[in-house]
Image (cartoon, rainbow, N blue to C red; front, side):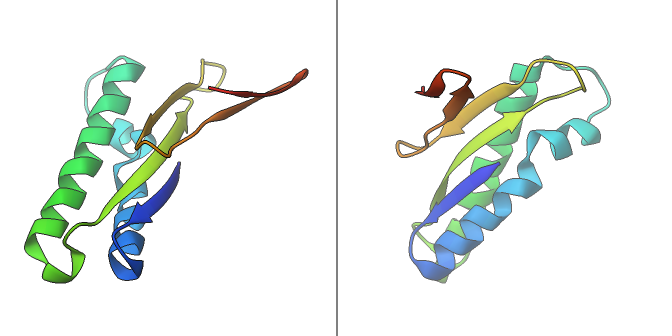
Length: 103
């Protein structure tokens, strides 16, 4: 996970630092049934959004904060890698033998 906070020095740092708490790996270990990888990623992103929004609402110094994020997650060894992002400035680059591929 790579996160880049927005909303000023303090607020941006807080927003970006909360992302790993909501990562799909953490979230996946906390649930008790098997979900499809896309469901785990979506739930992790929703959790991050609601956590950061609540902090912003409840602390005047953190109002307006947010974060962009790119998450690459491999649920199990040998499985496909799932990639998602949030934020207009979040980019993912895939490295291939023929060179980088910006998606």
